[in-house]
Image (cartoon, rainbow, N blue to C red):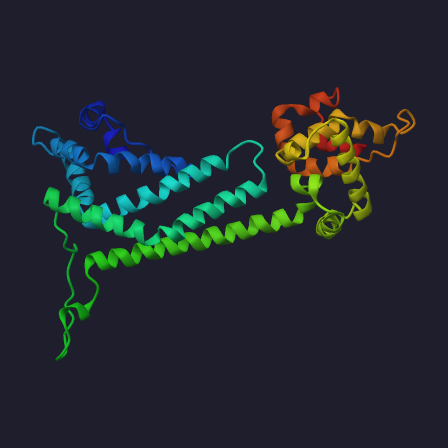
Length: 333
């Protein structure tokens, strides 16, 4: 649709004159582009068809008339109208979710909660989405005098004595319902797979999640750490446990409440560790009499947030060598 109207300024001006809004280019990588493309068509469908009818005017050139007639025939269709309403409803929720997932510093727990919310929407509103799409398509077809018959050749099945006409196959609305239910179920299944993958990662790094660092019991911490040390064998369970205790003492000494610390991201914990020279104390035990501040947690947090740190140039606060990432700096230590 965008490709037809964007070919010439004449077509684009005609579109703006009738719709008042622009249609968007479809992107394969930006989910928001999918919703932005569907939304104006759903909201101004009658105005869009009016613009296409004007492009079918004999005064237009052959290419313009041919493109407009082809598109007009495609959109003035019961199946198209069903999917238009269907995807507008689904993509609106997807768009809200994907924008939230781009929030800087978002934790894995919040990602899972947001995905679970999207899954709940697909499960709870499953029937309503489909029924609303059928109702919208039926109403629009009646108002605009669009045929609700299936296009193309119809293969008639030979009926046996006692069979009714409906036994020969699905009607078009029934066929559309079946297809839309299948799409929703497939989408829900894909979300379930991705949620499980994120939960697996969260379970692996559970020991350094904000809630674990601040309020988890000793028993919980000792249950979490083996999952991490299986992957990162350079860390020991006891070292991680001692450093979590040390972190809690510093949080208490700095008068940071438990509730406040629970809201911190991994990056904020890393900043706090750097602020109180956990790394320096480990690198210079002879200078720092406290000593023993091994940068285990700092290294673990860096594994997750090193890209964010490089983007924000946080390594400039730690070392005078801007070209060296914090991750490499800690490993050299």
